[in-house]
Image 1: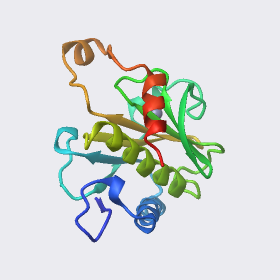
Image 2: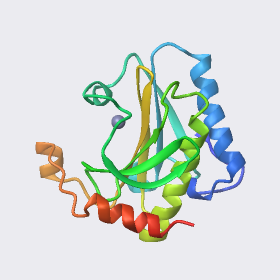
Image 3: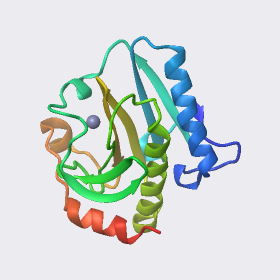
Length: 193
Ligand SMILES: [Zn+2]
């Protein structure tokens, strides 16, 4: 468990630049301290997204190997069609072309390498930025984000929880996204500074 701030900040969107840097540093240090296995880094925000604390935090879960969700992702993790929402340094955020839910986002590095290396602070900074935009458009919605890592390739997936998963999603694995990703990206871009 990584607590993101000394102050009682409920959202990742409220973190300062220095706090975002420290989150990246904490993730990197934990990875370096235990290089074996797969480190699944998660941010859950809001009770409906399974957050265990109101205070902004992330969780680092060690798995013996890459989870099925990572293994099943075909092709390069880094190249994904989508509509761009924003950029920060080497990182870019896109609304996924095949997003399962409204505003599903992918944060990627232009030159992926070590997921827990030099580009992680920029990716987390951009995560804060897109959550700020999301909150400006939809209010304080619950969301989940996680890091996917595979052989020098990585991205962060962001899944806002505006829709409820029911029999179709859970039983058939079919996700009905009522908001086209182009529209979602347009709204998020318009909400930006
Ligand atoms: Zn992924």
